[in-house]
Length: 181
Image (cartoon, rainbow, N blue to C red; front, side, top):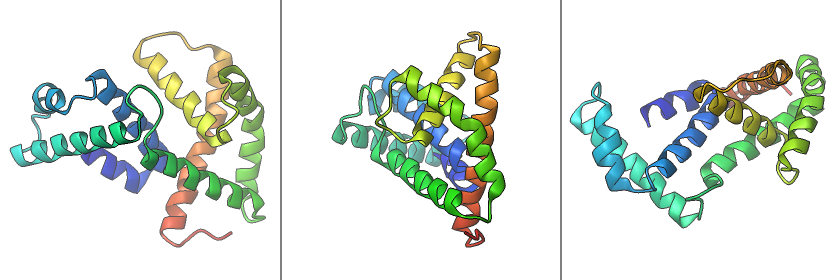
């Protein structure tokens, strides 16, 4: 929770990936708030008792949301879907703007890779940005499992990461009222 707050302020792309990881962590604990409180939260020894209690409550609230939204086994919470929608809207606005040609160039450089991700995943019913985040998250999971990542995939990820990084910067500028479109 404390990490998510900081990431949401500083880098919305990293925040979203973190929140997807939290969803999977909760699933790994069987969407059981008591288990998380007893087995996971105590690992945060750097936090005070009050902070650990706040963290346990945050996980409990997320678990309740996952149950209500029926994403206990797969899918994403609406709060996370809303971030993708916000980023997609911003992405489209920045692409339409003539003031950000470097973003357009980054998008068109990443586009063939995005198309390939969509084709391989079969997820053509979601936004291109969600496909980008799926690719980044999937690669993160591969790295955590020490599985090899092909040079072709690394090349694609470089372009997708660059695009998402730029978009995250524009999101921050927009929140601060500094983005000119």
